[in-house]
Amino acid sequence: DALVEVTGLTKRYGDTLAVDGVDLTVLPGEVYGFLGPNGAGKTTTLRILTGLIAPTSGEVRVLGGMPGQSGVLGRTGSMIESPAFYPYLSGLDNLRLLAEYAAVPRRKIDEVLDLVDLTDRARDRFSTYSLGMKQRLGVAAALLKDPELVILDEPTNGLDPAGMRDMRRLIRELGSGGRTVLLSSHLLGEVQQICDRVGIIAAGRMVAEHNVEDLRAEQ
Ligand code: ADP
Ligand code: ADP
Image (cartoon, rainbow, N blue to C red):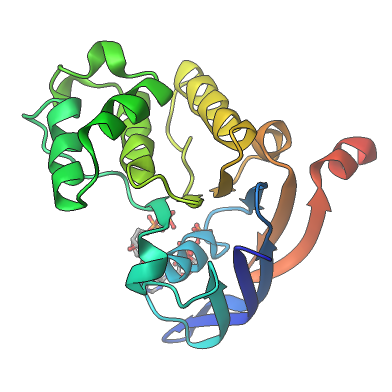
């Protein structure tokens, strides 16, 4: 069964049709790239899928339920906005706070810190982290509840080349570890590198969907 099933999704902001009839299916175990230029409607769609905002119309099923339902939220990890952490606390203490709030066992914290390659810097203040490290801590936070579905909005946006490389490697690791990932990006080369399937969105409309293998073949 699909983990994400979206049919005819629209979102209107006043006169702006931010999302215009999007259909989207994400299957278990795939890394799905939502590719489109700035303003295409990616963030709006992902915010709807995580229950942050309501659609204007359309059908949205996430993990068999409605976005934002507690049963669905508990099984979804997301990084939609730039992650907000306490700057004066260490990465570790920031995760401890989140873990406590979500009743996540302590050992999970070490596990996710290791996964995002922040174990060595875990005791340093968040404010001393590079942007790439901040984003990876955001991914770590998204993974605390061991979610079946991970939703990441432009996870490499603004990162320097090394930061991009690390983030892409991390996402590939999530995929090869069997995690289902839905991410957005405005970089074709990036989704070609890290995704199995790509949906292309422009001006709120899904214009094409490809297996990444086919995208490569066309070039
Ligand atoms: P993307 O993530 O692909 O850059 P967005 O989903 O952020 O695209 O935006 C899609 C369109 O909707 C843009 O025209 C944007 O300006 C508009 N938009 C997004 N959020 C809002 C909002 N809260 N109020 C009004 N317009 C919005
Ligand atoms: P992104 O590029 O990731 O879509 P933006 O910088 O476009 O993010 O948007 C940041 C915030 O501003 C979001 O909460 C979005 O909903 C809001 N926003 C974006 N475009 C508009 C707009 N035209 N009018 C009002 N709010 C907007």
